[in-house]
Length: 164
Image (cartoon, rainbow, N blue to C red; front, side):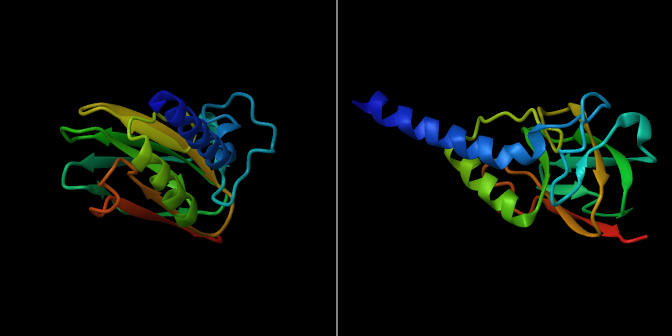
């Protein structure tokens, strides 16, 4: 009976993940198959060849990003090189604060959830990855580590998108 109870919970969690991930799942973070329909409230996956600059973000076990505040311009495409300098798994997820908090709840239920989306990168200790993102709207874009306990410990940051 236990497995019958867990199966609907897994399906619900997968559906929640799919719904929150749909905004990020389409597109081309390395210049492939984007068709203009992949824009979200925080922008869209960028094409690596169109990146105007590269920003390195370090993640550490003190539950901080360096830098934790970043300034970009509207329509700028940025390549983020994300490095895990800690001894535990960390991630960087771009999103609105609302989307990140919703995804945080799903991560609490399924902490081993892996991400394969343009606006997210999960890294083992000592590893690095990248996100290429185009910021199409002025305002702010949040980023956070949604591994259980990390967000609550302060592992979050902010990207300020200037109108320019």
